[in-house]
Length: 193
Image 1 (cartoon, rainbow, N blue to C red):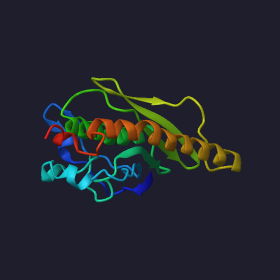
Image 2 (cartoon, one colour; image 1 turned 90 degrees about the vertical axis):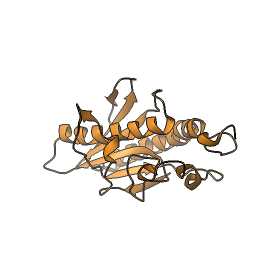
Image 3 (cartoon, rainbow, N blue to C red; image 1 turned 120 degrees about the vertical axis):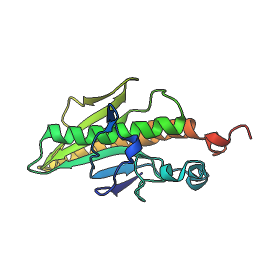
């Protein structure tokens, strides 16, 4: 897995949530931790079967996001920001991600849970974007995941980040590969040819 700074990555308008016919204003997040597809998975080939304006595995055409699926989204709050504002930003971003994944699958099946981290100064909070079918629910992890104010909190944070990395490799990667590729690494859209 690989962290990416995505402060300028805009979601594709067509994937943004809407109120009526009006798209909600896009919100940007700061960081993403992305899966590096295993050897034998040709993301370029797979994406060539997508329309040019959608040639990305994520919700953005930002070069750092097109080929590596996002596993964890991270929002860094400024001192003037509120947790509610950060949740709105992340909510719009994650909603656009869910829409992109649904269109890649051409179905409305439930999607893997996406971890989200919101940081404020030295505090780090963990949420899980859970697909409930008709909506995406942001569930807050009830415990403290650590922070950067003391060595003890840094070690706790490191342990949580390692556990999230394990989730990415043990749960997210198999889900992604089983959903979009067959055992030979062939894109789903080419199965049966």
